[in-house]
Amino acid sequence: MESVIQLIAVYAIPLIFAITLHEAAHGYVARMFGDTTAEQAGRISLNPIRHIDPIGTLLVPAVILLTSTMLGAGGLLFGWAKPVPVDFGRLRSPKRDMLWVAAAGPASNLLMAIGWAIAIKIMIAAGVNERFFISMGIAGVQVNLTLMALNLLPIPPLDGGRIVFSLLPHRLAWQYAKIEPYGMVILLVLLITGVLSTLLSPLLAIGDVVIRLFL
Image (cartoon, rainbow, N blue to C red; front, top):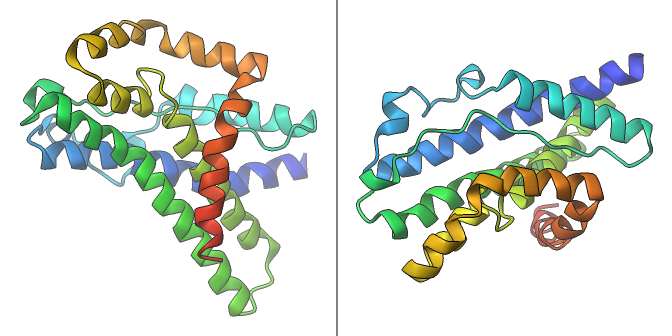
């Protein structure tokens, strides 16, 4: 029981920060390109309470993390926050600007992963031997790289799906958008069948290469 509590304690802060800044980044970039919907809803905020979904942010990640750890599959993570409201029609150039709004979330996760890596390096250089803080730093890197990779999958409504929509010609983009109602079902099927980890591997490998530049 103690190890379970320690595991949750190590991952809780990195996960909450990862999701909070990810969602706030979407709203901030949307405002830059003309849509103030998220700002008006109070979602351009570093207050985690404004972004947390009790089921998707807390319960589901905790259950999957604990289950995967007990089964020896490593610390798998899967979850979601309350989506930041973005009215793409209010962007100055909706289809083009959608790319930047969508990319802001994964980009923020990559920056946070780099931040955690630098923090680990500083702690080691300063002679900090407290295992809890080093473990939290490692968790911060893992959580953010996983969220970055997951959100970059080209499945609407994930950020990767929005990016693909923005890049496709208009007719193909609208055909592609028809997948969106089934996007989360597709994602869950990929998770249950184990295909998701295979799809994430190349993106995680790229993220790992970037992180190693700072260690």
